[in-house]
Image (cartoon, rainbow, N blue to C red; front, side, top):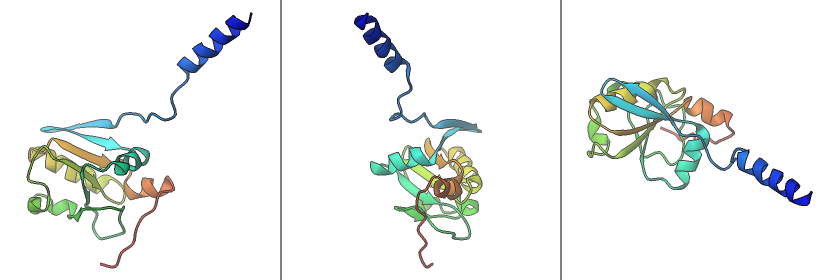
Amino acid sequence: MRWIFAVCLCLLAACSPNPASAPEPAIVRVAGGAYKNVSPAQLKQMLAAKDFFFVNVHIPYEGEIAPTDAFVDYDRIAENIGKLPADPNAKIFLYCRSGRMSAIAAEILIQRGYTHIWNLDGGMVAWESAGLPIVQKPR
């Protein structure tokens, strides 16, 4: 009887979701390719081993997520492409206040040939709602 109990426990453990594993980013298909939408929890995990160029595209300035690498107005991203990595295969992560401006910027970069674009789904609003800090610096 004990072995049946042990087998049942093993089966339950194997079927239960793993809380340590985060879901995969959502793929957003646009003209010319796709970018990935990432949740605040996923971004937090990515920032722990940061290997991307982190860009705030929100205008006007309403705060930032540390460690932001650059500030480029979403509606002038094509004109300011020189502020971004020149390699079209570089990982670039975009965010704004709500996610709308960064989604527009992501689509523009995909159309410009960039292949590894990430976007914070819900922007800084979602980040703050997840209990994560926004930094306010004088500008």
